[in-house]
Length: 207
Image (cartoon, rainbow, N blue to C red):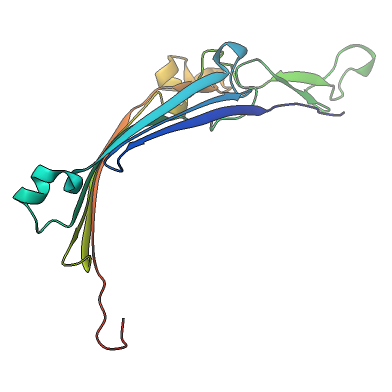
C-alpha cells in the first residue's frame, strides 16, 4: 500500500514608498497568498498594509514652538496578515486503507479483512484567518541626540481563528465517534505598549 499526496503555496507581494522632503512618509505593501490546504474557492488570501510618518520636528512652526525637541517623528500603521495552520486536504473527504480491520464473510469468514475508513469529516468552507494590527508610535531625540525615546502603542484583532471543531460546537452527538475538520471560529483582541529610553554619551575615552 502506497500513499501519495501533493500540496503547495504561492505568494505575490509588492511595496511602494513615498517620501517628500524627508518629512512626509507613506508606505503601502500588499501580499496575496494561496494555499492548497483550503478548497480551490478559498485558495487566495489578500493581506495589505499601510503606514504613514510625519517628521514634525522639520516643520518651521514646530522648531519655533519647541526648540528643545531635536527630533520628533510620528508613525501610524495598519496591516493584515493571515495563517493556514491546519492539516492539508481537510476540505475534502479522505480515506485510510486498513490492512486488518474487522471480520470477513464468505470463504475468508472469521478472518480480519481489509477496509477503507473515512478520516475527519471535511469542511470545504474553511479559509485564511485574519489578523489586523494597528500601531501608533513616536520617536524622539533630545540633548544633542544623547537622549532618545521611543513610544509604541498597538492594538491587534484576530478573527476567523482556525480551530479544531468540537463535538458540542458542531452539534453532533458524542457517541457517533469520528472527528471534524478545522473551522473558522473564535476571536482574540490584544493591546499594549512599549517604551524604550536610551542614553548615548562619552566621558573621556569611555563611551
